[in-house]
Length: 269
Length: 126
Image (cartoon, rainbow over all chains, first blue to last red; front, side, top):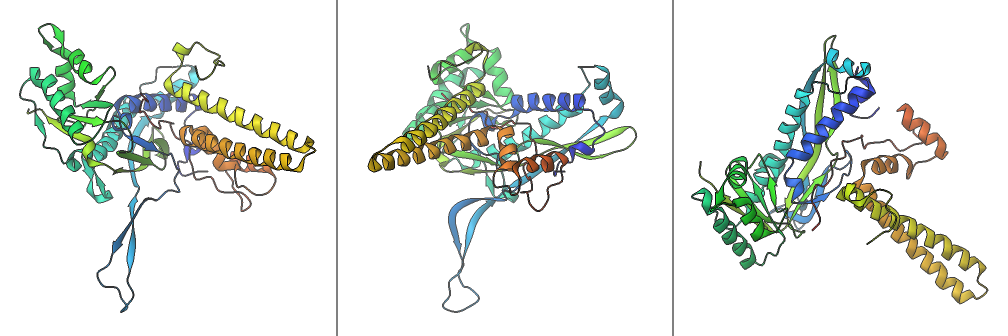
């Protein structure tokens, strides 16, 4: 038996299939960082840290005339969030139901996607993860009104170009920014189309975690890397007569190789 | 087009399916080349030509393994099976028994890669 202990759960293969499919669907929809950064993995549970190739030199070691240095590594962070499901509902799958009520799976998948994206964009200091936004050396560009978006995106693109960062570029949008670009228009021409005219088609990514606005980021590769040990998986925790407790988990870290490759576009509330 | 061997209309295939297809076709071609070089080397009556052909065969093996590694990194089922069978010890068919029973013995490498949802990279190549 492996670490997930799935075979111990009182869940039929039909119900497992629906649970996995629903989690997969929601994760693919909500995970934004993975749509724009490089990906390394999955490397499995064995991977405990990523080698940065660097050393932390000690000022003074325990012995005279012997220098000590410690290898600098990024430890993988394990995240886990529980899913509680009624066994009665899951048993309906064994009777042919294909529309199980899996709202707890959806809620947990949304929550863990947010955890991964928060680490990528904002950082996670306990895990030595610096986020894309705090690492960016560029001054944020303020978007003062909805109609300012195209001009702000052009300025952001120019800032990246001046820093020597080539495209293609992707605009990662928080919910408010995404709503504005989807709903509003400039003289009848949708703002979304104007932005795509600047950046190219398919260059907008929805990211629920970016509540402060949006990030313009180069996807040329080699700038940001998400390393995944065990990719998102559902495991079994416990059950009683009425409910089964599962969890969604992964192990990962994130590192920045070139901090100039992204710029924040701030949209005040 | 990188391949003429799609079995379904290309518009129905995801970018992931198309990349997996490219890798699998490449792996097949590399292994086919290994087989051809091996046979030609054995049949060659010139020692120097045989040495060149064996050298080329070894390079094709390297190419095949690089492609297999890409498949491992991008397909969780490949990854799980590679973890189970590669570098295992004892009769290979016994490894399957141990893996499906969940009872890895001292003679087999313990599987530490659990079945994931296979999300992987969501970045579109432009």
